[in-house]
Figure 1: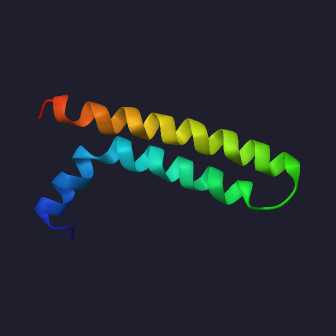
Figure 2: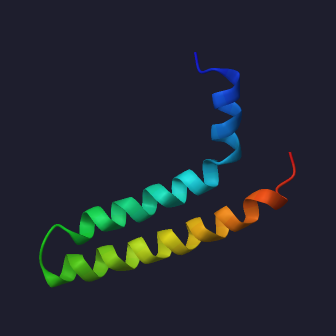
Figure 3: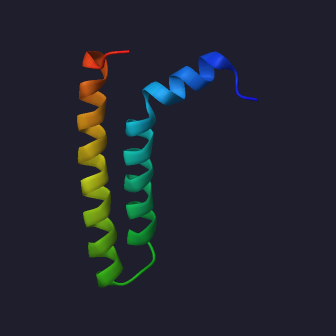
Length: 64
């Protein structure tokens, strides 16, 4: 049901999209309130963002 071009685009960028979702989840947890969740969510967001940046930089070198 998904168009072939969209499916190919999602397949090529799946790693980046997953890590971006992890970073957004970390930001969501960070805004729950309290120091514990702020630190926990900030750590998860930082890890997700750094992994997403690595996936973004590896993108042009990926083989089909």
